[in-house]
Amino acid sequence: MSGMAHDDPADGLWNWCVRATIAASKIHAAVAGALQRPVTTLDEPVHGAVLCDVWHVGGEFPTVIDCYLTPSDLPEATIASAVAVRLGADVLLPDDTLNPTRYVLAEPDGTLRAVHVDEIETDEGTERRHLRPCTGADPACAPAPGCSRSRWKPRPWPEAA
Image 1 (cartoon, rainbow, N blue to C red):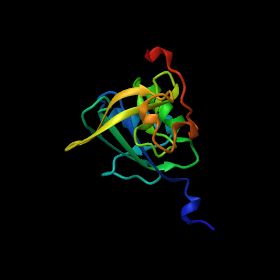
Image 2: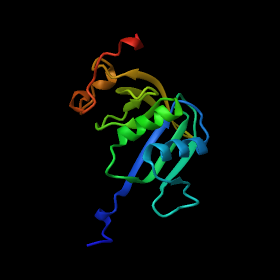
Image 3: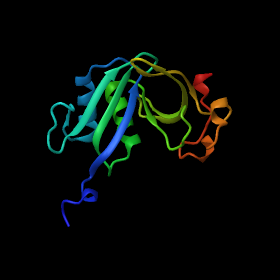
């Protein structure tokens, strides 16, 4: 049957942060290029387009991106990596644990790795600071569920030393 919600491949939500202050138009272009489909604002929805809201907060990752109606048939990490390459900036995306400090970092060279950041709630929104690798030794790795259960395993990050 057509028209059922599960038949629609555009049904997800992505929430990312960028390690730079970048204009919404540049974010929209990068997401559209990575997805090869139209991206528009929440104020100007277009049928078949991904809706993308962009705003700025403080911290090390000041550009916040919420993408709505994202394609469920494409891996979020792959698209975030492609967006990081297009923007030339690090992109944080949620990982697969329930650890509130743990993220996946998509780097401008396409690398994906597990990291931890501290979050601070402000009047403008959540600020993310103190980026560090998820090595399994960080105190943030200790809370259950452990980081080692993730698809994104803790690993040494020699260049961070």
